[in-house]
Amino acid sequence: MEVKVNFVSEEKLNGLTMEEKLEFILKEVKKGQILVLERGLTAEEQAKLIEMTMKKVNDKFAGIEMESYMAEKQNFWQKLFGKSRARMTIVGPADKLKTIYKDKEIIKAVIVSER
Amino acid sequence: MGIFDKLSGWLLSIFGKRQVKIGIYGPPNAGKTTLANRIAMDWAGTIVGEVSEIPHETRKIQKKDRIVIKDGKASLTIDLVDTPGIATKIDHHDFLEYGLTEEEAKKRAKEATEGVIEAIKWLDNLDGVILLMDSTKNPFTQVNITILGNLEARELPFIIAANKIDLNGSTPATLKSAFPKHEVVPISALNGINMDLLYEAMLRKFRKKRK
Image 1 (cartoon, chains in turn brown, blue):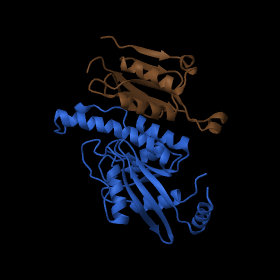
Image 2: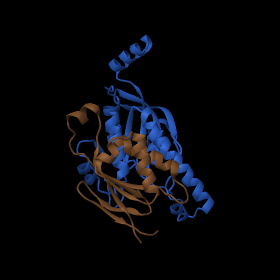
Image 3: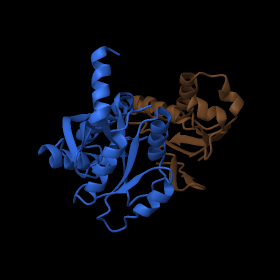
Image 4: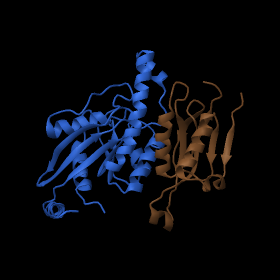
């Protein structure tokens, strides 16, 4: 069975508001897509995505699997505006994407084609 | 801010006593309610909530107000907020393994999703957080990272408590090396190990006025 992995460029999400961006992500994930975001989500965006996900959980959709590396160092502007953004975020449906190991440098995940 | 608030703030800054809302956050089954019960029993003689091996036992915010923690002349009055475990997925099938019926499992899952939302929203109402992690597990989970990132973004003072150090396989040193910029206190909330260290850290961290 095919599993689609979409690599989403920074440009694709740049022009969207936070709500629009997270709605796009959740809509794709609910369709069964796994997304790799070139520009990771901020901590606030991650929390909001979890909130929005919880509202959608039902018998057929158990939620999401999300993994990201946080930025090790914040630049001047990030410090000024208090934004800590992940370097990359991978997000997918919880029944398809499973993290098996993670540390500071490595995320090991498996993609399951069927439950 | 009114004159009374300014005056009481000034007096508190002199006498070092404050009343602060402190939330206990973490993933499901990290031992949040066990810790809340331990703190409430140690200083107020009551418990905050029931504990269970089944994940998502706490599905609503539980509070115990006006707990006074003391260390010598220093004291801190806290409103303790025990929060539901934060998760990115809640599958009702997981609860069936604990002997729940299909209906019970679905109800629990539904309530658990509401609990996660409530816990995240409560981040805006707090003065400080104890981020509780299970020291027998990998600390680099997305839930831990997301909570930590939100605490940093909100500039909320927080302590990481590495729980379950009484268990085989506990590696609090891994947690310390995972988060070198932050204070990590190894504890066993169940057995009361190192609670004095946690109280000392709470007094030090949460009595400070926020910027």
